[in-house]
Length: 246
Image (cartoon, rainbow, N blue to C red; front, side, top):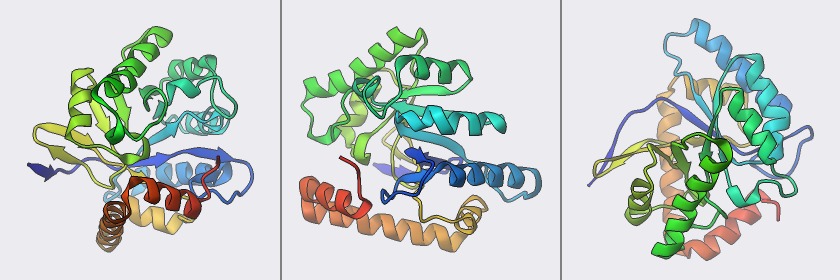
């Protein structure tokens, strides 16, 4: 049985840049700084504001270069979900940068070993991607890795069970709301893209009900498209629409 629950607001970011790019999920660092400043201001004044938890997926080098100093300037913490096999490759953080982020008080989580769609993995592949990534991170960081997020937002009960088996304490999705699958809690996140302005984010944080309804409707449409097209064609279409970099 699937049940929805109510959790604090979690925002999902990916990469940052000093320039405007065509990739929908790459924000200018200046825009991210404005988001952080807005959240800090609202936390001091509006009782209805739901202060978000910042999360980042993939482990892009810009997380260290731009996000870390901006978050530090406001004494805010985040969760950085890193794709382990990408660490030290072009455009992604090095192990030393990941350790620096951890030592600054941020949490490091797993985004699997190689970023596959987990629903397509065999049981052995799931164990490697989910459990193996956790083990490698813990060996390199010297600390328990408590959380994981799903590449491409894809999951099912088999994937969730593999996360339980690997002893993750928290599981994060790309669904815009949190939910339970049986007795397992899944934390939803709202993906932030570069077309979201400060007014939209203010409405989001202050729990604008109309915005939440529109967001749910948009997500339901996305899920329908995924089922209709299948993962392969939906992924191709998503990459085209968002200008996802190769």
